[in-house]
Image 1 (cartoon, rainbow, N blue to C red):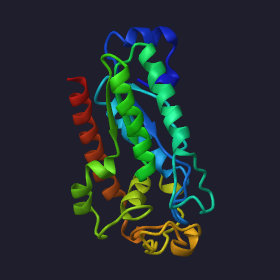
Image 2: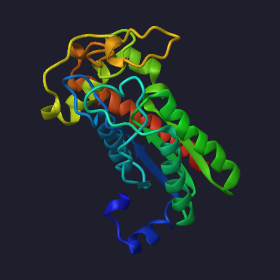
Image 3: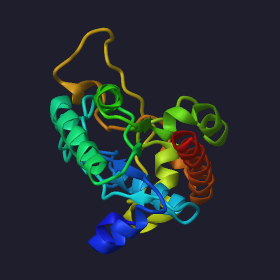
Length: 236
């Protein structure tokens, strides 16, 4: 049930059937020269569409902006501060709670550490403040690391690489503009550097050339199954 398509009467009636809402989080972020800037958002939204076909839950409109650190200097990336993401997340969850929702699954298609931590910080605060609320913060890539490693031929595949390219090939192949070359970031850890482009010019972490639509479909199936398990846990 997509909130953006419902009337207020439909929303009120649906609350009698479920008090669970899934909220997709994405980014406007470079994904190499071959993938769209909204890759993270597209993946999260598509996964929740498939979940909605299998389970009666509310699906909120996506949050299109997120916290991007390693890619913030790349062309096209539009980042927000962690404090901004915390404020947006808190406001949305609190107001959904006021409208009668109690079970929240925050699903992010972006796996950045500061991004996920900002969402988790809000969840930690709200489970203390709001009676009866249950929250899960989920990044499918982190949840399914072992399973995805078996699908990907590329060792240590990550951003804009084999898996993400396969996902977009499976749902929006017309948006995949060829393939970027295989690349991996070379940041001088533990230093925090200003010139991110110097150490990661192409913005790819993996080998997009090994991507296929079939791999993307397999990943979506795993993601949907894992989200259904999370929903059951939250609703318990």
